Image 1: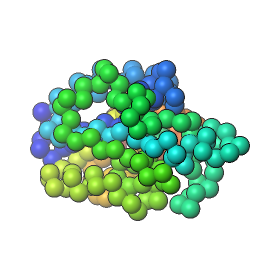
Image 2 (image 1 turned 45 degrees about the vertical axis):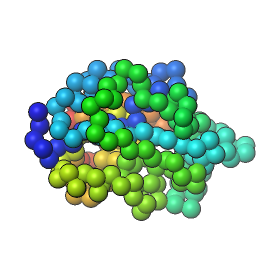
Image 3 (image 1 turned 180 degrees about the vertical axis):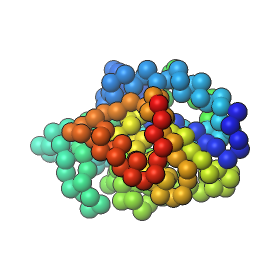
Image 4 (image 1 turned 180 degrees about the horizontal axis):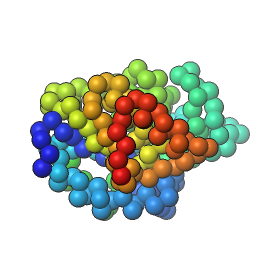
Length: 202
Ligand code: VGL
Ligand code: ZN
C-alpha cells in the first residue's frame, strides 16, 4: 500500500469509451485488469465519470450541419465536436462492468453543464470553473497523484496538466491509459504533460 498522501485517479472508464461504445477508444477495455489491480495499492481512490445532458454543446448533433470530430469555437476557446456520448443515466455513461468500482472513495462527475465541456477532473474547459476535486484531495492531505484511464490525450492529459499546475506531484501510467489520437492529439498531449512537469511512466 502506498502512503496516505497518494491518490489514484481513474478517468472515465465508461462503456461509451470502450469497444462497442458511442465514442470508443481503441482497446479502451484492455486497461481494466491493471486498473483493478492498482486500486488495491492506493489509500485514496477517485473515479471520474463523464456525465453529459442530452443537449450538451460538445455534441456535433447539437450543432446543425456539423460533423463529429470537427472543431468549433466556443466562448472559452476551441472545442472538438464529439459524437453523442456518456448521456446521463444511459448504459453508455455507466462504468464498464469489469471495473472494480467498489473500492472508490469518491466518484466525481463532470461535463454536466450544457454550455461547457469538462475534460479535466479539476476544471471545466474554461480552465476556471472548479469541479471541487482539488478541495477534496487537499482536505484528505493528498499531494501525489497517479492517473490512469481514458482517454490519454483528452481527459487524462487535461487532468494531469491541471493537477501539476495546482502543485500536485503527478504521474501518468501510460500503460493503463488508451488514446483517441485525433490529428496528432496524443503527441501534443504528451508534450503538454511533460512541459507541465507530469511524469510519464509505462
Ligand atoms: C473524453 C472526449 C469527450 C475523455 C470525454 O474522457 O477523454 N473525451 N469527452
Ligand atoms: Zn465527454
